[in-house]
Length: 185
Image: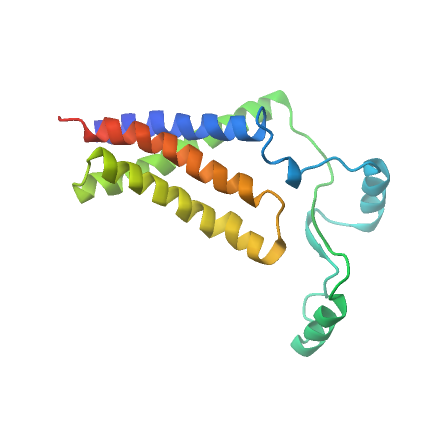
């Protein structure tokens, strides 16, 4: 248990550090959060047109639209512009909230790595190579489950960055865990 906890604390830190670099200094996710020249005009229009916070797909049909009408609307959209919007009424992230978000992100990373450590520990296959490959496969599972499946339908612009994140962060974690869990007790 101690081996898994220490492995998770350090492995979670490695994943958290990679994610921090990826979204900040390396700026890999810029394509999904780029600057819009007329952002003030766009935000003013959204503020007057969207009543509630939420995710919006434009154009879309109202909830409850019969299936055949939704299909016809989809056919009319072919070749036309569309947008996916995550709309929030107010930006309220203070430094305290940012620190709490960072803490929650780190704890989530530690928990995620601990789950993998538990699985690896139960398998009894703790050689460096097995642990490293298990970590890379976990990164690929994480990538395929969310960013890639989202990309299939909504063409997110930073799908490559998510793949790099999955392989780099879980690869770093795999190097650490492969050494840590593969040591003789």
